[in-house]
Image (cartoon, rainbow, N blue to C red):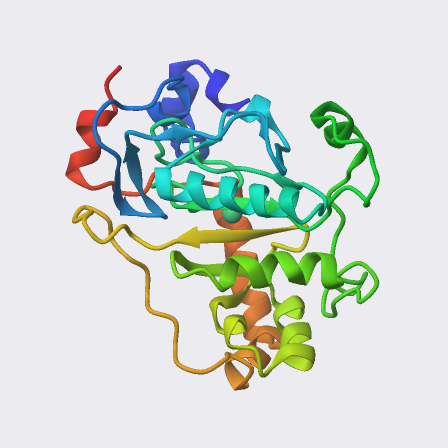
Length: 281
Ligand SMILES: [Zn+2]
């Protein structure tokens, strides 16, 4: 609504103008930027050259929301998701629903995410079709709902929903070398600590806000991609320590509120210089 205010009002009420969403060219692109694939910058401030689309559906996977057009990624990410889908088909396991990847040229979305900008991130739903359910992508999209994996308090995993079907996906992905990390809602990490503490892969599964009906998988920067900026390295150990307990603290709740504020009043991140060349049609 704020964007529709006439300029005179924006002058009179500059505070309102400040609250309006910043202009964002990245959401308008329909095609990837040509060139060899490059993940430029960071997932939270970056862009994507040579992005590859993940089709609406393929063996073992279905895009959950194809109309959002956030189905582009670095070929390394696309290969990971397709590879997982194929593995599930071979083993006769239910397909996965894939949520957002990046926009065709990456860049900020200014809604729902503060990452997914450089083609290395994908959201995958925890919910999957039941074994024996119809395999048609249309049926799956219509009938499989994204269920929350935590209980009503938001502080504890729902052990009925968050079961081996979900943990198996996390295990398969986290065990792959090209996967940098996976973000899950913090009670789910706690659940893994309580039941799978001795399994090395849980180190890569990191506690975060949200991510209670989908998890977020990030692949590493490709070794030959010098424009790609890797995130903070994951600390040693399985992460089942005092740093995990912090998520139940008052301080953590305060940080959560800041996150929500940022979603309501998004700020355009400062992107690497190389992104400017990709931002023209
Ligand atoms: Zn995500």
